[in-house]
Length: 135
Image (cartoon, rainbow, N blue to C red; front, side, top):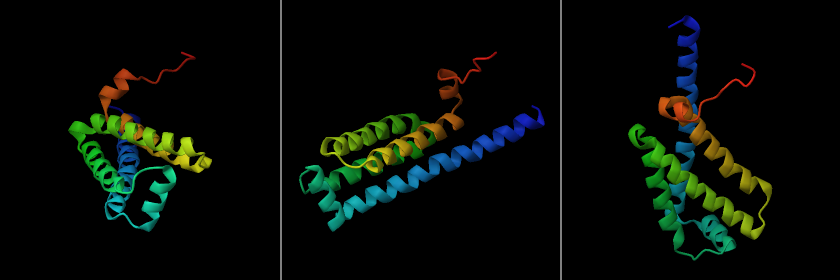
């Protein structure tokens, strides 16, 4: 292994940890916040047209999916589950005509989830290789 490769691998490892860690922290916080169902959560769920008691279920679902993602052995399954969750969030906001930020934020979180996983998982890089089209 050349020095460039070792440095690149070390950089990729740390980038992966940061890219995976930020969404994990945010999603765990978001799921925990939903469990307590404070007034802002209840108001946003009402605005989205969801029943009042669904925040607890969605909070638990989000926490479980995030934990599945945080475990290296089950991270790909967790990423798939969280992609579905985030897609549902996007669809809910599109349905009521929310502003662009409501749509972009889940996309950014999903990109960080998959980008961090891509950098840390050789199997994903084998399935979705980045190729130089000029070569």
